[in-house]
Length: 330
Image (cartoon, rainbow, N blue to C red; front, side):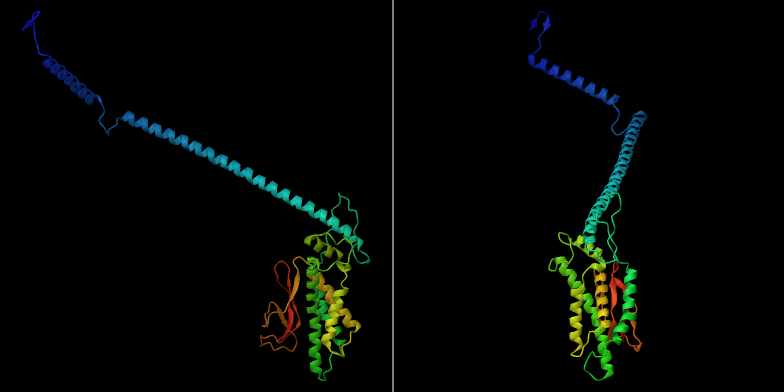
């Protein structure tokens, strides 16, 4: 059937032609794109160079940032170290000022009790511009010299002054007891001094000196050091003398020489005890040790077993080592 000279085509056929035309266009476009696109997995030289340049630039940027952070870290560490040094100096200065204040207070208190002419005299009001007097700390060398003199000289005098120490008849037994009594005097002196110091520190015993109240442990120890020979050791001496007389037996006599020996034992023991750290006697070892003992005359040098102590060894100080060898019989 003709319509205006045109050949009639069914509607379903027209739809089919349109679809076919679209398919041909899509196929052409796909083939053109495949011809112009770079195959997958392959890059040309320019693209590779661009990627490498980008990687180098990124690496350079990261390296610069890392270097900047390292320099900043060093700068901060330097500042921290400087602050630590300044803080350490400030702490030391603060401790120095506090120590000076304590010493000035203790000096004023200790000066009230300075009555003997051979004791250093302290000014009660210390001007702030002058350094505060230091606590009286006995030289360890001087104390060791006194300890040696106590054994080598004063003990010999006291030994001679002990003729009636016991009621036994044998001279050898009397000599043995003399050795024990004079050794016990030193041992009791150190034990009594340590007991008194502990009682003072715990408040169980008062110090017979004006200005000793209201002090902490460190200040109280410094105060006792400042008192020096002015500290009253009468009670300690009497305690030791009483025990020695009791040990000596019914015929024991307290001669002037023996009394002086005991007094010196107590005074020296007190000076060693109030050191910081303290010095103490040691008689615990029962075998001879060359670094801590020396043999008394008449000892068996082949024997290492200690039969008795004639004189105790002295230990202490910062190292807690033996500073004076004990005299023993082996």
